[in-house]
Length: 260
Image (tube, rainbow, N blue to C red; front, side, top):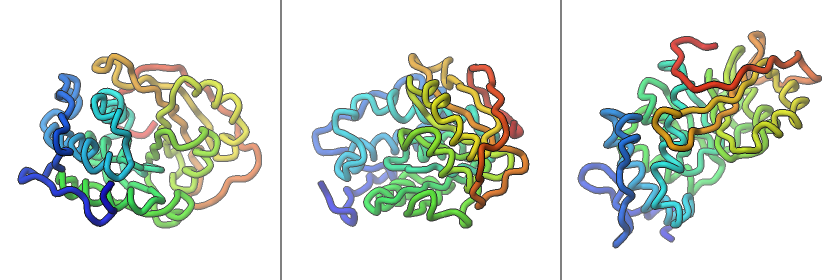
């Protein structure tokens, strides 16, 4: 593994060079549909994940063959739920999943990547620069550390913690009516039920489960979409049980031009 300050060089096109002898996964047709003219940036991101991402311990080497379907596209399709041009704060960004994938898929959105590990924030900064992303801001720290400095209409997270704790961490970073998009697996229904009290404490007033990318992915991405109260104030911890929750119907993701 290389040190945090000695990443592999980038190619002349700006993409991170893959590990010697390593074959990059084939670009699927779904990637062309999701990223369009920004596909070269996504290819650069995949190359970085397959090389320096593995070397820095941010992605497992066994994940390289399925980087597109399991990771990059799985995250990028969540852009369907981000209103055009709305800012995003991504918690626990790690290898840029979903943060960097969303920055590529949503060029009009400024994406704040919040990650406590220096080796990860160093890699995120270098990778964003190498592939030519100019809508990314990297913050080293936990969600609690950027309260007061970062506020965005949309918060995202993938495989960070349980939904209740995640909502409590993200609530101070969201304005009234802000939305948390949590990429989750099969346990999402149980978590939403078991963590109902924490969700109320985080000022969540509406929630639903959305399947994103159903038209392009063999396995759509499951997202818990949580909406905060209109009078919620960023940077303020919410106490008590809060208002009742309205349970929305599960559906297919779609891009919205205004906040729900």
